[in-house]
Image (cartoon, rainbow, N blue to C red):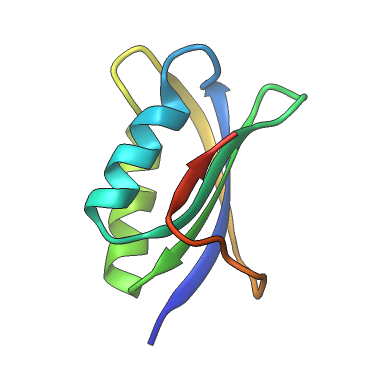
Length: 89
């Protein structure tokens, strides 16, 4: 059974390689989806994969890459069309 979650990451998460780092971790976990910057300064992440892999990505999102500073992580279960692979944009 697969799980699809949308995450909204707040804090110092743009301009610190957050999306690229998220894509690297997601691909290693076999997760499909995307990471993209939002105009309000947050990063949106869509993650589709096994519940364990999505949970592991969620734990990583709380920390992010070294230059980031995550202040809040919001997630929700969603039912959407998921792209092949993992994209940044």
